[in-house]
Image (cartoon, rainbow, N blue to C red; front, side, top):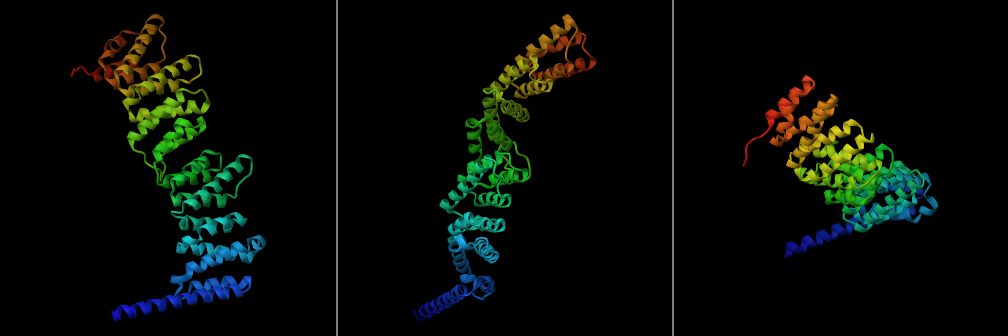
Length: 392
């Protein structure tokens, strides 16, 4: 019992000493002129007891900066003092300073101060839903201003984006995606992409919602995040990527605008690589749409070849039947007129070989009897060798 009493007395004495040191620095700070205040703060950081009180002192100085901002926000000494206090609050993780820092961010126009404040908020606002919400709104207001033609303070803006990424709150998804989708300079777009990847939330569900419910341009931008293979990108599981690519294709097929066209083709490339049969119905619709567009010179041949390859990647009976019928039509045209497009013909034959459905046998076999090139005939023989005759 005596030992406990001695320990408590020692602890209280230590706390009292630490409080005394803090109060002493606060008293000296208040009495000093503006130039000397920064020296006092720097001296405090080297005090033997600094680890016990310095965070509180940084908070005290930040409150002073806030109280004098109306008069001294443009003063060089005040700017230096505020930067030092903000940096210190961040380094010590002084969470009680978060709300003060956020208010200061709107009052100080100097870019270097705002960057230091936002860097500190990335640490001090951890878990503070109210501050994070206000920081989200601060960046969203900047987006609105940007749309009216007002350029932001790009250094501070980038620091704010990085802060939201470091804070990692799911509520920041919308504002970060808005930044990513707007025509900011590449450095800002890249900062938003990286920040999105650090958010702790259901990233796939967020992207799916945008692909389903947002305007075409945003759907396309969201899909670029689905297929993001850049360093530090989020690697979405294949099963989820399948569903997101199919969703993108479904949405794009129901629209008629340049962004939706691009989204369709991007989704088809992904689905071709994945070969997910669940997307077969949408891929068939896409094929017929591209075929019609190509016939009316609204799509280039490469798009039709891509659509054929995607059908082959589906490896479904429906895809095999459609491609076999197409080959039959090409054979009839070649037989009657002697004309054919070798690129499209080779793509069709190759896709039938990839599927391996025996329904294509007669059409592939007949190729050898027509006036096709040796390359086409060789491709048909290769496809024939891939046909599967087993029944289960």
